[in-house]
Structures are given as C-alpha cells and as structure tokens.
Image (cartoon, rainbow, N blue to C red; front, side, top):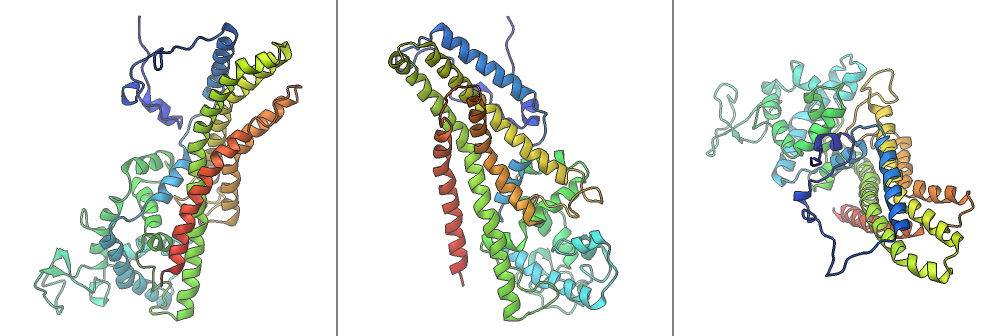
Length: 423
C-alpha cells in the first residue's frame, strides 16, 4: 500500500506548520505507555473520531494565506543584537540624517505625500537619490569619524586626517548603500531571512528592496534603538542640538510607543502558544472523568449525551483557534494588503502593521488577541442553547493561558521599568 507524505509548502501557505514525524519525538508509533495500553469503548472512539473529522473538515474550509499576525510579532521581536552596530546607527543619524533633515527644512523643497513619509527615517530614498544630500561628502554628509571598512581615499577624504588604522570617511551614500559593508546590508543581516520571505510573499505590491527597507525602517526606529539600549535619535527633525524640552518630549513619546507594543505582543504571542497546550490537558481531564461521571450519573442517557457534547465541544475548539488567527490576518490584509494608495485606510506601509498608524489599530490588536479566548467561550455558550448544560467548560482555558499572558506582560513591564530608570 501507499504512504501519506507531508506537504510542508502547502501547510505553511495555510498558516499551519506541520513537522515531519522524523523531526519529532513521535517518529515511531506506539500503542503502550509504561507497559499499559488504552482500551477505548466503541461509542467514545466514534465520538472522538467524528469530532476530529468535523474539526479537520472545518479547518480545511478556512481559506489559506500568510499569518500576518505572527509576521508582525516576529518583526516586533527583531532587535539590533550587535551593540557596535547600534552605535553606528546612532552615529549615522547624527552625521547624516540630522544634517539632511536640517537642510530639508532650510530649503523646503516641494515633496509628494510618499516623499513626506519617506524622509522620516535614516534610509530615506529622497536623501540617497537627491543630489546635495547623502552623496555630498564635501558639504559634511559623511562619517565624521574614520571607518576601517572604507579605506582612506585621497580624493574623497582630501583635507581630512589620515589615521594609523587606515580608516576613511565615507560619504553618507557609501556608508549606507555599499554592498556587504554598508549599514543597510549589515542591518538586513540582523533580520531572519525566513521573516523577509514571508513578508515578501504577502506584500506582492512591493519590490523585495521595498520590503527589506520597511523592515530595516522598523529595526532602526527610535523605539527599537531605546529597547536595544542604543542611542535614541538625539538630533531629530532638523533641530540639531535641540532643547532639553525637545529631548524630554521625544523620549516620553518613544517610551510610550515602546510600552504599547512591548507589553501587548509578548502577551498575545503567549496566549496563542499556550491555548492549544491548555486544551490538550482539558481533553485529557475530560477523558479521565468520563467513567467516574457515568458511574455517578448511573449511566443515564442524558449524562452520556452531555459528555458526548462536551467532548465534541472541546475538540472543535481547535477550529475556533484557527478561525481567530485567520480573521486576525484577514483584517490586517484588508487594511494593508493593497499597499499604499487612495483605496486603503492608511497612507503608509509599516511592517509592524498598525502599531504606529492609529489608536484604532492598536485597539483592534487587543480585541483580536482576546478572540482566542472569547470565540471558544461563545461556542460553548451557543451549544448551551440546545439545552445541554456544559457549564463553564471554557473557564479552564481562560485560567490556563492567563498565567502565561501575565508572565509575558511582567517581562515587558520589567524592561519598561529599566528603560524609565536609565538616565
């Protein structure tokens, strides 16, 4: 006879990663555990099989797509792990970006809506491609400290000191764009290639370069620089050496932005990971309880049917988890899937979808995160309309994931507290 094979590409397309059996601890089938084997009554075997079949069929009916919520949480987790690279980003901000913003405000060129959004980050295409900005090393758009990755060039670095280390003073364009050694290339190495491919697979309205830039833009944003203990953009918005009040206002906004997503995303991620684990233990508890409940209920038909519905309800919760994840991604796709233009609710593309666009988007994140608990609970309530008294069957799920959610939020709160204490 033939054998079943796992279609990994199809499962990943459908937002569901199924490991090959050989890659798990279940690579050999077994029928005993510690020398004991389970004997299943025919009725409960039938109920289990039919419940699994109904659940699998329902999940299969959910359309496939990229799990955007997971992509967002992965992007949010990305950090600049190299402290020297983080410091170099801060140096680039001071030497290049602050100077370019100051010139932009002094000259006040006419910018399109897209360009207005573009000039708000250090890798701005406008600054890179417009003559007189990042390419103009003689006007000061260069590294103000020697960089060993760029050897001293007598033409480019004329009039600048030649150091013993042999480092030169690259223009801002070279410093950012040079292949393999440029800041952009080294920042891109900090991001998982798998994450970039997932994002590119969904964002077909963008080129690979635009996708990479959007991720790098989030990686070097002020809130990420603060979280990685790098330097915040100290010379931002054209105010080179701004007042203390400017710095205080900016720092407050940065901490506020970081706090919102920092506490929310780990908590949401933990709930999504913990929920299936809790459900597995609840199913185990139900199966163990069946013989005792039947005996105490004197094998009454009503008791048997109540347990039957309860088992089906627990198994079918898997469908609600999948539906919540699909709805989550579909809403994000509706908001951002068409890219940038008049037919979408937002004028700029952000890989941390919604986290920096509007309060409504952040509120939507909280609501959708709660759906992983609310939908299964509502499912049990709906079954109760048939007359089946299933009680608070889902309270175990709520209690089980709550500790994971609180622990994740505590970790975020500790980081927030450390950020607030740091002078």
